[in-house]
Picture 1 (tube, rainbow, N blue to C red):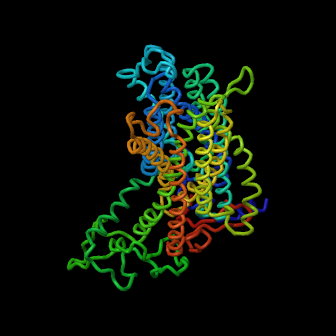
Picture 2: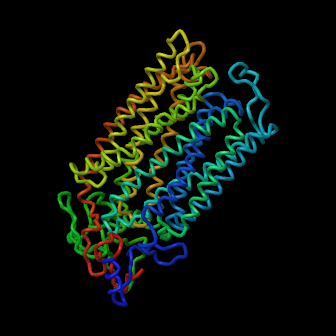
Picture 3: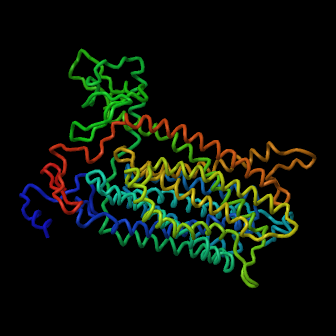
Length: 613
């Protein structure tokens, strides 16, 4: 009631605003009382849960379909799966670019969501019509006589598969970014806690979707046929799109900013063209600089109301892009490809500085690739019987960590985060970089567990229970909760104007590179370890009893351990340079053109006429 009275007392030239240019579905300025926050983000979480449910059911059991129905060899099947998953995540860059530059998050999700849906439908059609597949054959007992899919049959399969990849790749980064856009942390720092809670809620939705996919949907695929299974995936994707559409009236939408790559290219070109120039001793002489230069020991404090970034000394070569060339014709204006602002230069520096953090998560996702390929095949060689009449599908073992995570994630958010927040003072409990580090450390033990179990399976005189491979999934599930959420939060919160979706897409590229690296490692290990008269490498046979998967797992454990120390180095380097980044926090801005909170409701501001939304 107090807030209502205050609003009634506002003068005619002041209205409710958010001050950041977001709009509703009609393109009108958004209203914080009607748009955004968790009521809007919940619809996006619905899409996320259904979308991951649909694609996880396909991706996690795809190797079984490719071997049994397409009749590919084990190594070729594993590479088909990893290349597919890698393509999904590399295409996230396309989705991020289209969203930030041209379409916006909502329309990108809607368009490519239907592309993904068409891929699921085509996969279901191929799996149902026998003429679109090679003749039936048992790859376990009669592999030599099985005919591998080729020609038109192979074409249909790969077209359907990569329609799914294109759609899912473009949808994924927009789901995270659009949900996060519902929280106005730029103008209202009190919503930073809500944003952190949203990222945990997004991972919870992801876990629920994965759990249903790896239990119910994989069971349907195994017992009712892959055609029915793919059809259920199509139905799940349709439900996700329906959830997205239902939230249309509640969204805060960030309009596209035009090409996001052009300003980056301009900085690089301008710095290169002026590489022989000397920076002026007074940094205020640089184009677009509004404050003194910062060194590594300085703490950035805002002295203006525009959120401009301070000039820093990291990557000093790029500062030359801001040098003004003195010309006899003073009226001549330099091209934007020869002269850039300090803001442009500093944003490019931010992008460069996060690349090492991103690179350190690639090996982590190479481990994930093994759990979706070779670990599934491990399960097929073990005793899958639970009762006299029920056998657990090997692909469903990946559901075990998600069963645990749907309980752990709420507990983490409800108890651990507030407790850690009291100690660290950080709104997320621990920083995103610390969260990534914990995850990378735990991932090593997932491969140690996998190697020990595979050695036990090979040496056992009888077929052991499939639950022996449970620990490797459990350990990796916990590590993924830390690393995946921490990486998304870290990238989304970077102060690079109009590029939040693209930055989120970069985090998915880590998955892509990890799966591609897995394919390269499999091929390289086979080539290096081929010896003797048979010429067989560690992973060259279709029979895991003859292969040396345990040694391959030990190799990955060693790589993961080295990668953890690699990450510690770059984390220290980034943290050391962070104080010189010149990023303005919302609570530090106090200029006259900035919205002012009028109390009570965190979302209600008074803004001057030139900022009215």
